[in-house]
Picture 1 (tube, rainbow, N blue to C red):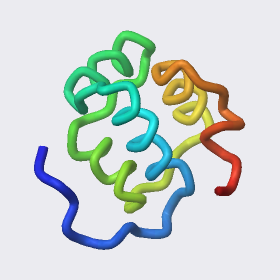
Picture 2 (cartoon, helix red, strand yellow):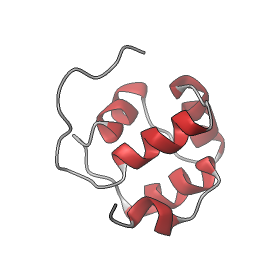
Picture 3 (tube, rainbow, N blue to C red):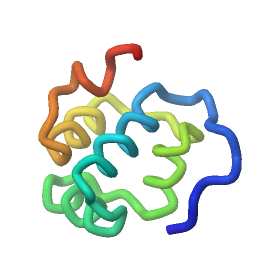
Picture 4 (cartoon, rainbow, N blue to C red):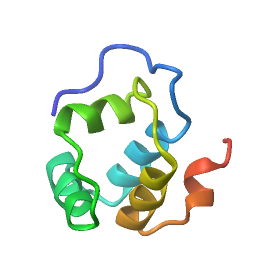
Length: 81
């Protein structure tokens, strides 16, 4: 996937952390999408991209699944930097 050229949005606080943790674990976005689907979160590549770019709101149940897929706690996604 090409690097984001627009500055981040302001619709969520977890998107940039999802990207950071995903990259830290060397998980490609398409592989991450597959993990999310296995865990019950059916999300499109476009929606995940918008979530990561902070252009999309994130539901509470999505935060739980995102954290589980990344092997982290919800606190790690929600705490301010």
